[in-house]
Length: 138
Image 1 (cartoon, rainbow, N blue to C red):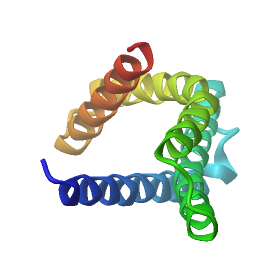
Image 2: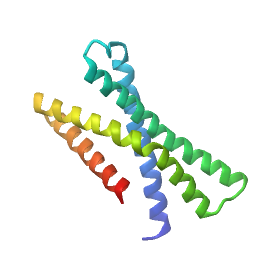
Image 3: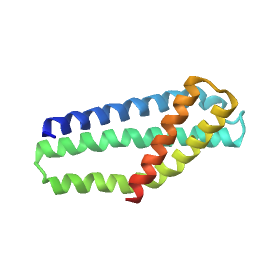
Image 4: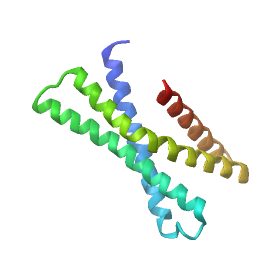
């Protein structure tokens, strides 16, 4: 695959991650005022979504900061790889923990109300959680 495709997929991944983070932040903002009314598990789910949103936005920030540093003083590919590796080490444990809580919640919601939207949401959350666990362990 040519390097042009790598750049395209990297940009697409960052855009997708930003969109999902924005969506998580939007949903958290809509439910934040009533988070204590729905019980402790929903309180945990809302906090988990807020943490996931912050993790997603931190990826965007670290990439932008890395690009700015490279504009001022070009760094080696080794440095850029280490930068992303350090970010990954900082966020993987919170990402796995909060992702598991959100995945469990989506499964509960799907069994309560069987709709296409709930099934699609559960499928995405389950895939994302499985992918995160696989990549964290390899």
